[in-house]
Amino acid sequence: MKTILSGIKPSGSLTLGNYIGAIKQFVQLQQHMDDAIFYLFVADLHAITVEQKKSDLLTAIRQVAGMYLAAGLDPAKTVLFIQSEIPQHAELGYLLQCNTYMGELERMTQYKDKNRKQDTSLTSALFTYPALMAADILLYDADYVPVGDDQKQHLELARDIAIRMNHRYGDCFKVPEPIIPEVGARIMDLQNPGKKMSKSDESDKGYVSLFDDEATIIKKIKSAVTDSIGIVQFDPVHQPGVSNLLTIYATLTELSIQDICAKYESKGYKEFKEDLAHIVASTLKPLKARYDAITSSSELDRILDEGREIASAYAQKKLRKIKQKIGLGRKK
Ligand code: ATP
Ligand code: LTN
Image 1 (tube, helix red, strand yellow):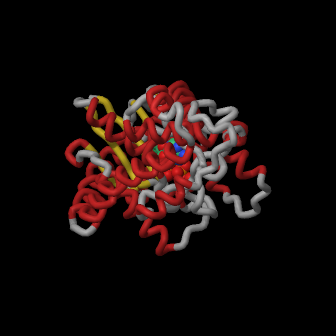
Image 2 (cartoon, helix red, strand yellow; image 1 turned 135 degrees about the vertical axis):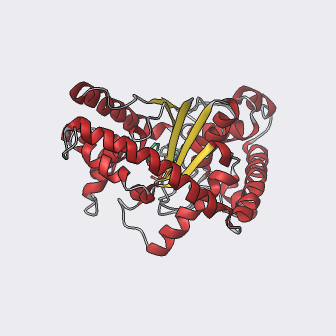
Image 3 (cartoon, protein in one colour; image 1 turned 45 degrees about the vertical axis):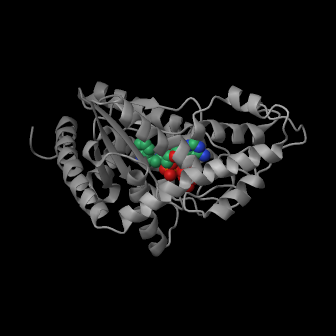
């Protein structure tokens, strides 16, 4: 049986980028892989690498957990849990930090981007965060890790750490493989298609939140930045805005980008955007309805309790084995 693992940070309101790049992918994988167990978690320890308001954090944790289920993940095949409820993540994270070089962490583009802005609130945990992410993955012997494009480099580091520790201490970890979607791995900001759509953005105009109401969704899509070329075609270099909208359209309808371009060949951006706005709104409406039903029942807590028990048993055993391999404690 294969183990598929992924996590989402509760660091704001989930976006259409999270849905297309990650959540939708998890559901599709689950439908296509009969013989697989999914470890999916709320990466709350990662969220606090930047300051979070307590009440917002608690809400966001529940939102991520609820959205996994609302999107259609089958609780019978999923171990759903909250990262901070399994202390072995942080402990293994430390052991992996001891096997990760400063130079490797300094090369991470996500860190470099944040550091370039000369942000004085950058924490040391933000710097070491890829080692914690590696621990999240290696702790459960994951075979596959479905993620968006922005996490590719972190995954390569997780693989390097696993290989290094296997070499140093003998067989410790399975070396995980990333799964990155061919279309939709990087949904861009609606106002600035040069950067990825991000839930921790100061302005909410560039992203569609999975919790936005219909009118807001329509307004945001209609006011997405395009260009003056006026032709609906896929050209991320010269038409990044339109190409991004085409990607969203294709992933939500399962139509090919080519077919969508043909459909709007002699039409302008207005009709294309209006249609897309309705496609997004009608995708999110039932999602939100299922989310409301799940979070207003005691079902979510029951599933999270069950997930914590299963994840905890696996994580305890795995960490004990790694500590023995390294030579910590008294037991051989
Ligand atoms: P932030 O925007 O606050 O930095 P994030 O959304 O990038 O956070 P997570 O919530 O942990 O970070 O991301 C969860 C998953 O969603 C990851 O697999 C990530 O690659 C994917 N993802 C995030 N943003 C996008 C995007 N714009 N397009 C495609 N996938 C995305
Ligand atoms: N770092 C990821 C979230 C994340 C994750 C993980 C994804 C934390 N741990 C383990 C996959 C596997 C992010 O910021 N998007």
